Picture 1: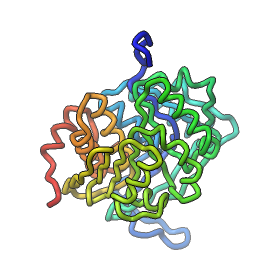
Picture 2 (picture 1 turned 90 degrees about the horizontal axis):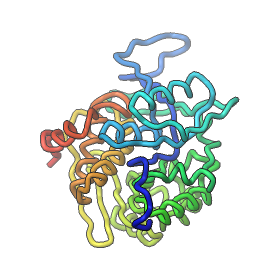
Picture 3 (picture 1 turned 60 degrees about the vertical axis):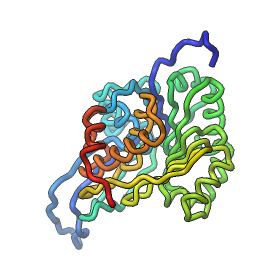
Picture 4 (picture 1 turned 30 degrees about the vertical axis):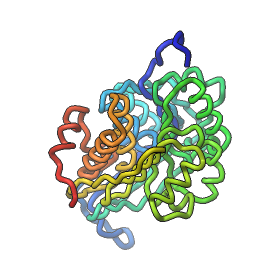
Length: 320
């Protein structure tokens, strides 16, 4: 981007999977037949590898643009109104009549695990073309989140968009969902345009077949990824840059629900990088965001604002 280019309109543009999560906890089992059971809490949230991340970025003070697809149904209206409630620009959200908004039902177990039933819906028809780039890429950071459930975008459209983002001087971040080896074949050409890649270690292994974090990170570096951050749940995260590798411990917390923890990590990472933090401190901040979300129900739990999250980074104990 030349010195004469205007400053981007947004701090971050978040492209990808936006959905509704219907969550209940604690679910110890499904009642037999037509019987009922009673649980403590049910929530309705905007989630997804893009939706969860952008709400956390907005809470952390970033000026955000949402780029995704919803149906013209009650779920789509909820997604859009919720995003607007967090001050997020929804002008680039696509509305598709006759298509369901993507949605999930999650029965959260007492240990925080959350088996999921998902309707793909409008996420499958999200389509970003070069005509959309002036709007979609008008941000300092461009986050692509949700490949694996973005049927139209998986493959060449994602590569082309990220290539255009780098050509425009943007900082690119990348995350995905439902990782498989066939998905890796589709997204591999896009990796050379990714500055920060933040999958879970389970997703990384599913993509490349390598269980060791260093080996997995090396695989993605060889494809062109600059910095690879592998989240490892209760074991913290592994960070690999072209110059160094290191591990960070997880916070020692009582886990309520692990929904959206990876999205919170990514959102926190981006928000910290936006403030000029170095990669180690930014990754620690991302880990704190994940811990705060794990302490409540839903992908938007726990995080209030940047200052309180920074305070929690020092307040919450680390696992030893």
